[in-house]
Amino acid sequence: MAFNYITREEAAEMIQHGNTLGLSGFTAPGTPKSITEAVAEKALKAHEAGEEFKINLFTGASTNDHVDGILSRNNALNMRAPYQNLPDLRKRINAHDCHYFDRHLSEMAQEMRYGFYGKMDYAIIEAADITPDGEVLLGCGVGNIPTYAMMADKIFIELNEALPKRLYGMHDVVLLQDPPRRREIPIYAANDRIGSPILKIDPSKVVGIVKTNSLDGVKSFSAVDETSSKIGANVVDFLVSEYRCGRIPREFLPLQSGVGNVANAVLYGLGESKELPSFMMYTEVIQDAVLELMKKGKCTFASTCSMTFTDDTERDLFSNMEFFHDKILMRPAEISNNPEVIRRLGVIAMNTALEADIFGAVNSTHVLGTKMMNGIGGSGDFTRNAYISIFSCPSVSKGGLISNIVPMVAHADHSEHSVDVLVTDQGIADLRHKDPVERAEAIIENCAHPDYRPLLREYLKLGRGGQTPHSLEAAFAFHTAFSETGDMRNADFSRYAK
Image (cartoon, rainbow, N blue to C red; front, side, top):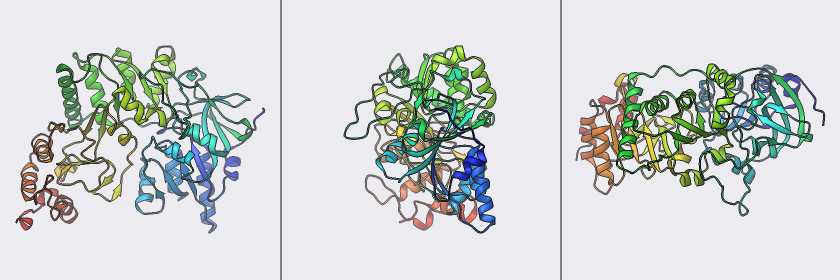
């Protein structure tokens, strides 16, 4: 079948107010970069003419400035899911200019197939190649596009000439059957391949191909600072201790790691460890540090949903495909984040928190309990099903004005039932086999900043009895003090004393 090559403006002209779009990719990699910009420009013109124009947008995870950035600046988003990370969209969400619902990433595709979110008008797929019969070679991220492409009435292809066709063989595209016909997922090691290297679509649904030529534009993280380095070293020390005493098998277990400075510090620390053996990763995102570990032979294989590499690292990958080609496999989000597989493989999960409370609950999403930061992402998928679930965060933020260890989290994403280990720059709290008061004592002594330990101990004494001795009157005294004075250290528990 011969496809039509069109401009991005011609593609945008087909997309109407109220349409629902599904995009390929997971984080910036694999995410379209052209058509959505033209849609944003169309929205701006409509608004200037006094007309309504907003779309609904479903993705694999966060996107890039070509999508969430410009669409938000032009107020072109009505509904957005399941994850985001750009300031422009965050402002719209917190101002209620965009309806955002935060979902576990493993659930988004299947819930779309279940019919929870209505019909999908268009899918936009970034591709390295497409054949006349509809075989699509995807880019550097998969996300939920196998489902979106199946569900969409029509499809646009962004054919990105910056992507090498040598990516063929680095994808493992699987579309799960839905209940009651779903079978087990036959992944028994991180490097098991169970699907297709290409995405098969109905070529009759392709209404146009737009040519692009652009790398993914992932920004470099700032250099690992002293706090991140301490957190990374503490996580590595914990893993080494578990390995020494036999609670981690001698061949080690697959790792999952989030994105950011702390994750980088942990990965680099693992690379320097003499005691820990080489390992595989079963994760949702791999970043620059993973390629360095592969060059050293420390990471032997990575199953992921996305290669979230900076442009320089992406060029390094493309220049050395013979070396990396059989060491990386990209899967759809409902496979990379699948609870069944995570539990079976015994994945060790390492994620970051905005704040944690003294009893072990974690807030991953809402600053001071109200303002959405990014979203829960895949942390819940891995946390609840991990062999060991580790959360890390700095003990304080804003120069000590905020304690990230609080009496009660202002928003709960992960309960104490799912959190095994808490790590800060101050130390490690192993929460396994501890009752609530024992957890609180371990977190205060090992994870809280010294400036806040006396206040947290004072709060713990206020408890009104019961197994988890919270003081409901004083539970948010830290947050209230920051709201009123700009410094959590001004929390006053004396007024709550019995």
